Image 1 (cartoon, rainbow, N blue to C red):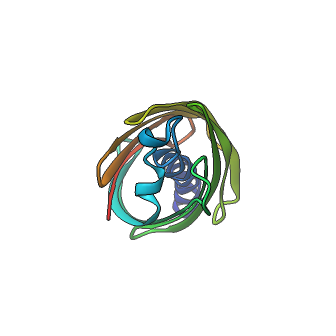
Image 2 (cartoon, rainbow, N blue to C red):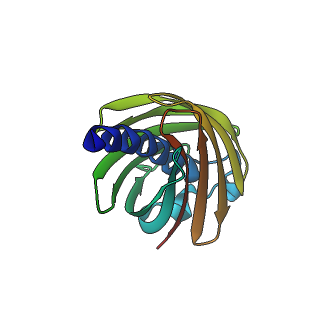
Image 3 (spheres, one colour):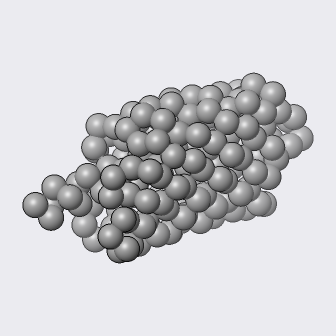
Length: 165
């Protein structure tokens, strides 16, 4: 039973992490304000996932971000693991003058959905839908980014992750 609950919890935070990382490197309207080019490449980070029973779990993640020469499109692959599980997240996002939209999927737990919101050079506010519903705030700084996700999903309540090179 614990393994089933853990799988359900991991699915929720895996979904949120996928969207969060995808959003954290989404290009913004002006090329000079666009963090995507600087963020393309490999990142690593850590954070904490929170659950409705008050428990939390540490995370270690590796992110791979690509734009294939187009600063308004983003592809990403994120792999995270902790002592009890691992996951693989992917997303494809598009920026149109600060309006962000796209799709995400979590391959280990077979979850998927959409992302919509607004972006500036240093902050994103997004709504995530699909396998879970919630909100996300992304803070972007030179050489790092952090992601905070809140969810109304069962078991999973949120995550905070910091990434750097």
